[in-house]
Length: 205
Image 1 (cartoon, helix red, strand yellow):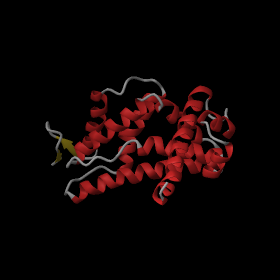
Image 2 (cartoon, rainbow, N blue to C red; image 1 turned 180 degrees about the vertical axis):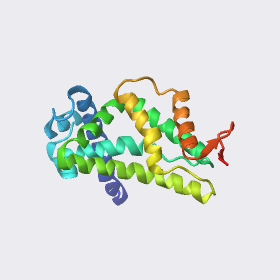
Image 3 (tube, rainbow, N blue to C red; image 1 turned 90 degrees about the vertical axis):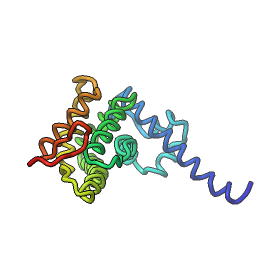
């Protein structure tokens, strides 16, 4: 075994442990709900030692926060289509796909539970919102650099992300392409920019 192989092995194992722990948390939330499992339960489901979980995350709450942030932010990369309307459509479509997947409802429920879990939960909520806002702001800043007039990040949260999340949490209906595009259209209209038939943003006079 070469020195390079030795150097790569810990990183590979670390990634596998993280992926296994994340999936274990998601499964346990779906099966038992928040607050009804321990680090030991996560470790057993993931096939790792308790010490591996504690060494990496320190507490169960830190692990749960990592799962929530990763599953609901890292899974939806920021698109770059050349227009704010195209970017928002692609972003909303990606979010809808992620939260409609097999683990989407469990992860959303985890975020809601963390948000009401005292001081630690508030910190988790703030970290999640900060990461979502950072992602959105990068996309919107790029649009401004192109000379477009994009909506504010909070407007995207209010008019696109919140309805998507609520529809999944309350089983209020499927996230169809027509529904998702309609949210983006209403956002662009509300913010003063209306997409034309090709999806390109035009300024309201």
